[in-house]
Length: 98
Image (tube, rainbow, N blue to C red; front, top):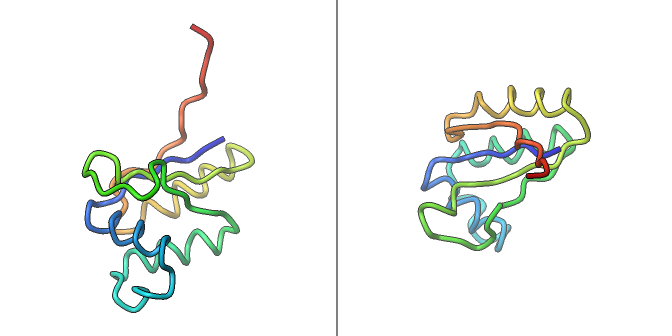
């Protein structure tokens, strides 16, 4: 199962940059990004960009977290939705045969 997250534009660019060079810009990233990183680590999960290293405004804001079950997904969505930089957090729809 996968939780997908859409972030505010500037926050997504900061997070993309921070993931490429974790030490370089760490003090300069906004507090919402720092809190998001802490929340995900506290949950024992990993936040990954859907489109790594993108700066295009339609692609950069999307991130994902792999979760083991629906209960974990709901907990992640609830926790991350409280962050000011998260515009949307939702369970990725299951794929079905056409």
